[in-house]
Length: 135
Image 1: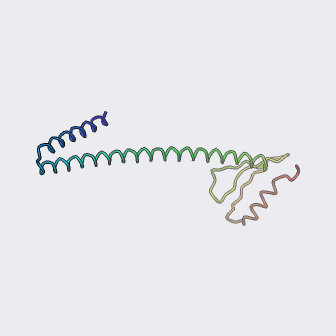
Image 2: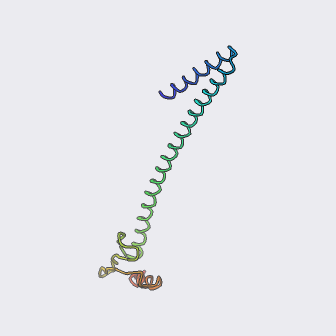
């Protein structure tokens, strides 16, 4: 509805412009031309603003979709790790804490490591010590 109103405004302005051209009033013609240009510029600004808002909304939707896919991938990878290591991790721990449970053939062993006090090699060695090498 607003688009048709804007088109009607442009059409009316164009009609006024044509009538002033025919009447040969240069000062008035300049005023009408400036008014017409201002109306055109405003319409162009609004259209660009709307396109920018649409693009921003689409970007936000794509970011949400990407976040969902990343979460799903993290879950799939965690399942693969679990199948190989039989370690089920707790993910809501501080960054320097590894916490979980290793489900061995005979018993479940809790894992609770403060990685800030261990080297990466020590962490790796301790974790791999839980994994059976028998295939």
